Length: 606
Image 1 (cartoon, rainbow, N blue to C red):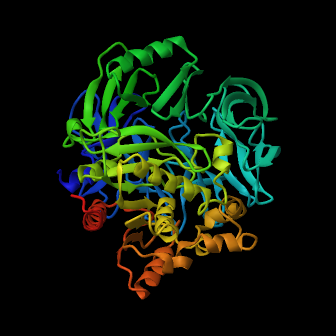
Image 2 (tube, helix red, strand yellow; image 1 turned 90 degrees about the vertical axis):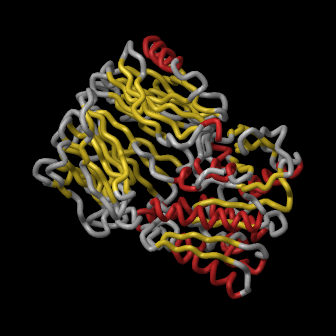
Image 3 (spheres, helix red, strand yellow; image 1 turned 60 degrees about the vertical axis):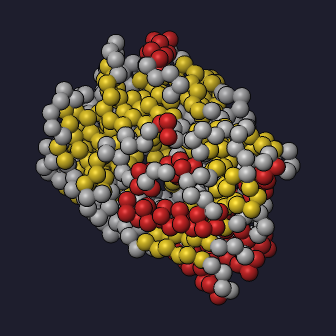
């Protein structure tokens, strides 16, 4: 039985990147339990601490030149990210977008222009983002494109010129707008319903052609070469028979597409377009048989690489790799966790009640398999989103629960991404219907196979997973012994009334995906757990960040109040310095300690 802190403490070093000239490596490391930025020469030498945040961890960072790093941070989890920069000697710390209530999004780091970046700000109007060119030396902001009110994203070409915009029109239709130069106005080139997707990945050199993924005319996305000015497909490059396209690896130095990746049930798979790159990857993979090997970063010359290596029983490690050499270990992300003490995550599948196959993952305590696990206490853990996906990988929560003697079931119910358009759309307006059936059918599958003790099953999740936890004990009161709701939706009406301002242009899409409060009033009322709290008969643990911009604190308040009025046992944890999920280490510890006690009491676990 390992210490709880071992599963949830900050890594000693993580989030490694390499400088454009390959001479320095940067990483996050804890300082007063907050993740800060450090830089170290690749040829050895002491690391230099660049930031000294003590209130909240840095959200993200990147190199803009061999001498400068930009980074973002928010306040108390409000997700209004502000942009800063600092030199690699720790000097010259500067705030660029320190505007109250304003969120900064990065459009393009302008790799070939170390003095500028393109960013998007909702400074003029909190609901929409304008595009700006930011001079990192002077701090001057130059408006490149003003958002007319419907644009949701911007894209540059290989020279850093703003050439493409994506917009929402008529509430539920999406539009791609294009221009040949920044002196021209944008013009619409393709309008589709939001269910059809065209996603530009990168412009090809000296061309108006792009690499793109699209599901138009097909169920699963394909990688295609496309004319950006017309959105006409020129060539289909790759399509997987079962899964959507994941990411691509494009060599900027060689100006070639190297590979495309697809996330399968058992992990990532790749299709190669370049034999030399395939040999390079196969040589690298051979150093780590049976592991997931990913290229985390490389220098501009594409000679020096940072490599991530992991699997389902280790949080992973980073290596430094140079062509023709042996990978050098830089850091393990959780060296205190020993692989032979971890459980395994098994890819499984089961049939939903209507016959649809659902892919899932069953994590079991060390030494157990699906064939040997019997009559176990189980934690059913639906993912958030719901437009997201669980994958085969290391999961700190699952490993912690396995170490305490529980089996953990995670499933990719309808609405999950990666399985094609029909599978995703089958979950639209089905949060409390077909989606919950898929989740509950997984629970019943474990009971039917004898893996689960039917009297000792909990349901736990965050965000949409929190909704699923509440819906599970509300509408299937005999199936679950208890529930843990972590920043979850409880009332579908109030949820849509309190979304962040920059989600409001997407509200009609949300109505088609979740339900229209007027046209689907009866359905939303029937599937909102807070409106049926009198059905709940089992104990709950509820955790909420006070500053959550996505799932307002009122979502948890109304559920907790309704249960306490009826005398139902409910433990309520609110963190005043958190948002959508607990990021500060001490708050994570508090939450998982509470979960450990709660599950031990109600499932009789360790």
